Length: 497
Image 1 (cartoon, helix red, strand yellow):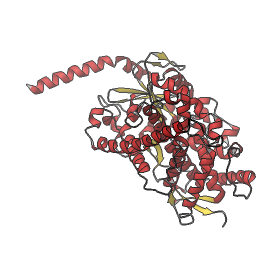
Image 2 (cartoon, one colour):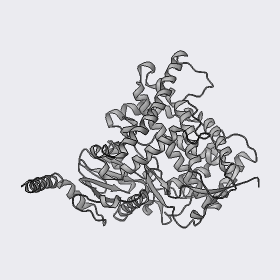
Image 3 (tube, one colour):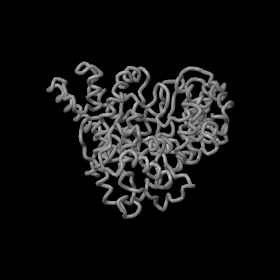
């Protein structure tokens, strides 16, 4: 009897879902995909396995979108995702739908209502407060921090240089963590000289859990997630991170109040201090709001820059001809001197910037983002998007669309940003695009250019055995961001030799 009741309830539930999804099924008929979607589970089965397996699935879906004129689709359980890899279509989506898809809101456990993934009513007013803090005059003051932390990194690299292959990842992520903590919080953390620092350790552990959850649809449900060991550990990691930042915020508020919110003209002002001022001082952002936005900057600033710079190091190790051109440019700017890098130097490093951009084209740290449709709209290509559909903007595939990048789209060629730039501005979006693009784009570029210039002035970068063949694409995995499976192994040789 109970079995029969269960079957009746299951049948009714499936019929309700079938009826509710009728408009989505019509959408699927206009968006092709050769990857099989099964009833009830959709393409969930493709996301079982390792982080590398999951990234391969994302890449396959992106290739499908390129093959079928910029669009593909997939079901994850009962949720339909339309996948776009054409910049014209992506621009339409990003400017029409402002709400981030629910799958991205899993980060709320750490960043709360931080603006990067916040709902539109929260994001809009915060964006107005945040935008002025990223003015170039503010960013230029941070170059001294990047320079100083790069110098610390070079000292650390001296322990592994000329000793064979090693992973540069720990060095890069420690550098970016120290840089971001100083520029965001005005606090010197010293992660580079204390590798087991609890803040960095807990940050990395939480990132691993978040990455596993995003691409395992059965963990999207908060109810199921809270029943797993993932949740118990994530609560512990988040507690350490937020306690650390909260204490700094409290201390900074007290210091500013004691000084009547006045600072020396030559004193660097952190993002936290700029936020307190631009939001209205004591009558502006609450400590919770400051915590949320500070965590956004810490999370986005640390991993994005570290991943981008680490991939750049690996690409330069493979392409010695490109590395020689970068070094020639460095010689033109700095000569044989060892003087510190300044904000005025960075705009002169145009070829190095093209190298970083080309690396981010092939290996964007954030390979996908997602929006949620709330109204019915027809795209420029005639795709009729219905409400309550997730739209994945596939940056990895967008950057490999030969229609906009040419037949050599898989080649690492920094010169393309000089002689054949993309024919549409949205064809290149490593930091997203449109009204909700990343405000920290210039910050990340300045940080990456500074640390790469510092390394290349002192060392020649050689490949590890795993990445010696430059004709083979790097093996990548999805771990919140897209990262290197072999952990960015390179070799360093001192140029003085």
